[in-house]
Amino acid sequence: MILPKQYRCTHSPTCQCTRGHLSEDVLLLVFQHLNWNPKLVATLSCVCKWFDDFAKRVLWKEFCKTRAPRMMLDLQSSGSHCIDGNWRALGKLLIYCSGCTQGGLFNSTVQIPGHFVYRTRFSRTLGRSLLPPQCRTDVLYVSDPCEHLDQGEEGDVGLFRGIFKSFPTSRVRKVIINKAVPFHPSEVCPYCKAKLWSMLQAKIIPQSACVRLEAYEDCIEYFVCLNGHLVGICTLAPLSDSEEAVPSEDSNHTEKKQDNCLGKENGLKRRHSLLGGSENGGPSPQKRLTISNQCDIDV
Image (cartoon, rainbow, N blue to C red; front, side):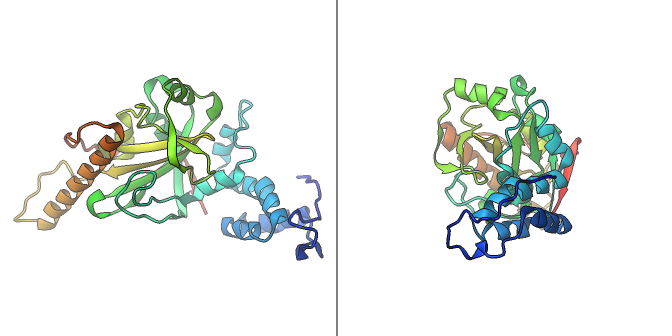
């Protein structure tokens, strides 16, 4: 790869890093040897604006292409270059679960801090199940839910993230605009800081989403930003939820089932508070399914 050489720091004329500055070719070789370690790339970006610019243009791009080559090739195929200039945001999305805050984007009652995910899978098949029937020609990659178990009244919480291919020309974007869905008044995308639309307010979350996410029906919510990044939350259904609890034999199972029911009720309250509807609704646990067409990412 031939890169234009830039030896001067863009931070300020008096910055100390202008003395004996490494060339981009050398830095590229160093990080190639380090297998594009994301934590080291993030550390380098904090040195000065020159390093930050180089990381955004080159290092994060190489990181994404190395960790998910087929996914990146698909996102950039057919003349689609929506991720150019947003490689750092995409790199963060691949390896970072944004968590949730109390009363924040998802109006949650629990606090889940953001954290690195050292192994995850992004699936185009899962993404398709999160789209309404009229929008299933769009391409959406979505991660498996990051499970946060026993979150009090919320039950077992699953957080997921994803990205659209060619979002500016997608059917989902057209539907949202035609329905005049407003942006979230205060929260922004945790990956690129762009404004967010609620898919729940747009009423385009299909029932197939709960099947693929292995979650309770009507306890799923996700947002999409102007750059096509998707962030969502769901209340996970237990594997043995269809089995009848027997208190005399397994009291722990009964308690666990009650906790999960509380989690579902809390999720329903959150959903209906956004839509302005009632809080009534019965549980509809779904059987867990395997997901095909996946892209594994190791950090």
